[in-house]
Image (cartoon, rainbow, N blue to C red; front, side, top):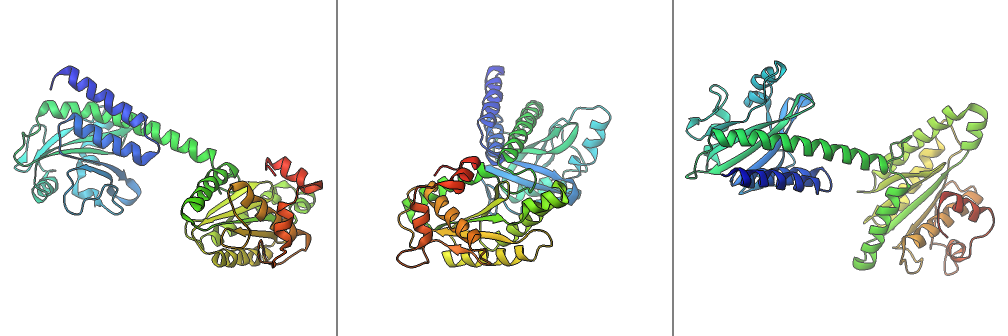
Length: 382
């Protein structure tokens, strides 16, 4: 392969990883780019999970053999089967050596092969009808992160020393891309996470709710929102200090997360201050109300605070057409406001008050007074 072609392949791999949205896309771009660059038929990217003592496959691309999934849930191998990644090579890196790639063939050691460490890979090549592979360690911050594996089928030209050297370069590019993807993933996580409770934040709810309402309009999927206001937080802050108030918020956040687990895929979030919510897409309205009821019960048992005011709005209830996330939020917020005004011990559910449901009327009315000012402060549009 000419130098210009290889340079173009390196650039293409780097660009593919840079354009990825999230870690999974970055893994796929890394494996696919390396596979093309090395003229392989199959490639995999694996991570070394030190705490579990295993090499776990993140992605398989190309001509996959039976049992090889693109994003496998449980494909992992004890590192003692592939000790190169943890023993021999790691010792070389610690001594200042380079993490060079090497080649294995179905016939045994090849160019750059490591006798004594090849039997598992040789067996795997034969079992899957592959003739040779090149294995390139991936190193981040001076430590083994995992490996890049590219294979060719039986009968195809066997990888050589030049291929192994090129794979070393590709692995370095992949390492840089993974580091960037992990930084972006962490930035996204922080951007959509409440720092105090670890729950999702208002930005995450807005994004997820917009998508959910679009699905509801398109496919009729049930979308439900539970909005709750933690009672007594101001009293706790004023009498026992904000550190204790923060502890109350954290404890309630844990209760919310626990109750949200009753609803598959539900998003538990802190909207700000003393206001929290659960967003459920798919579960029935009755299941959501049941989870909200459990939330009220558990919140009432907390040592701190005075329980929670909880409102529920679901597209499965008679609340009228829900054409925007804003309307569902207004309905849930109105139900929560009514629960707070009535000091209700159980959730108030929009649309279940008969033909002239007061919650729906409240939500549809133009907001005035303290409630409107509170929504304005939170950034909620009426």
